[in-house]
Amino acid sequence: MHYFLSIDQGTTSTRCILFDQDGGIKETHQVEFKQIFPDNKSVEHDANEILETVKTCIQYVTKDTEIESIKSIGITNQRETTVAWSKSTGKPFYNAIVWQDTRTQDICDKLIADDSLSSLFEKTGLPVATYFSLSKILWLISNVPNIKKSLEDDVCFGTIDSWLIYNLTGNFYTDVTNASRTLLYDLYDMEWCSDLLEKLDIPINSLPQVKPSFSNFGEMKEIIPGVPVTAILGDQQAALFGQNCINKGDVKNTYGTGCFALTNTGKDIVKSNNGLLTTIAYQKEGEDPTFALEGSVPIAGAAVQWLRDNLNIIDKSEDIESLAMLEKDNGDVYFVPAFSGLFSPHWDETARGSLFGLTRFSNKSHMARAVIESVAFQTYELLESMEKDLDTDFESLKVDGGMVANNLLMQFQSDILDKSIHSQKINEITALGVGVASYLYVMDLPLSSMGNYITSSKTWNPNMSNETRINSLESWYKAIEKAKNWL
Image 1 (cartoon, rainbow, N blue to C red):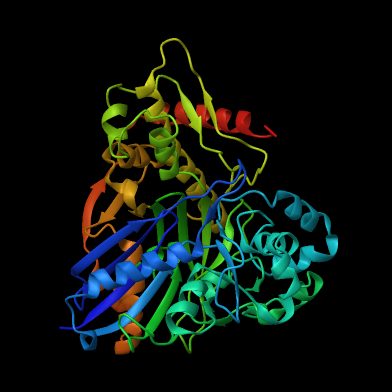
Image 2 (cartoon, helix red, strand yellow; image 1 turned 90 degrees about the vertical axis):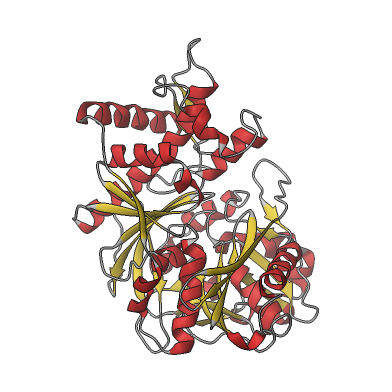
């Protein structure tokens, strides 16, 4: 029996899964790590702690398996989160700055105001926003003295995949999907944008070598020495591949810390007119890249954690569904989870989280339902934007992520979209996608073989009147507009 290992390094935890050659789970292990909030704009992670959680998880899931039977490793990771470390010592200069962090808004404002940069940023497929890696790199250069002092010869900047590859294999690599989330990668020339780097005084040798997503990134040095890492995908691209969205027009949505909808646009780079991101879906070594349109919202499952940890309204995240079901509807309460501004399709960094429609009648069950429904409303906006950009109408949506277990959310999602929703038997699609990708590469099998590893599990169909749907959406849009321009 062959096995392949998937390292799924997420925003709040690290998970490793050892799959057998047929996609069955032999062993899995998950470790949470600390979320660091220095102030109300900043979100950080300890890069060394992340590395240790990865090592712990690898050791746990492989302890009873012969190394020779493990054929490949795939790594999928939280994207945009940025680490700076020393080439000479291997130690981080500072905590990792997380994708949710908004401290760099002033830097972004200056970048936007510089007209000489606008044509260069267009090549990246991304708007200038705190979400992406560039402003985090510029902040680190300006605010961490040791980085500025040794910038030319001793600094590595990388997303989490690069940090892990550097420590696990000794190589300084990233893949095209992660590179395409930095605001520094030229989608047309498929290389770092040298003109942009020069204008911003970022040495190109401080950035990793960019390789196709499915290629050899090096062999493990310890724990399971000699096993090659043969696939790297940003988490949402891993979910797209894991859902077998390998054909143009296939669409999926992942419900995790945030909410991320992607649709495969094939070999075409589609520029959005409706607030979406143009990104790389994946690339196999020796082949042209496949592109995608993406809609990203930062707060989905994180809003449930907020109810649990900040307000203590629920004890466990899964309790939100039963609490919400104590009421038949939302009591006309709407929640906009703009804790770090609004991402796709609004891109308003001045928006903030807001609750609307509260009366003396409102209670915590209405609030719980409003939080659940906010995830579905945000997803509706993402798919609506995609349909406008592509001049199409999706018939259905493939879904994955932790919140798919929330039946109330999935039914409301189907209702508000007026589309059928399909989940897979295995919910850890992100881990499966990158793991299978690594195995297909090693075994020289076609990418279409991904379809052999997934089985449809559950379908939700719309059951809401058109009048109710329209009224609900009108109230949501009203809430969105009122949450904007808070700062």
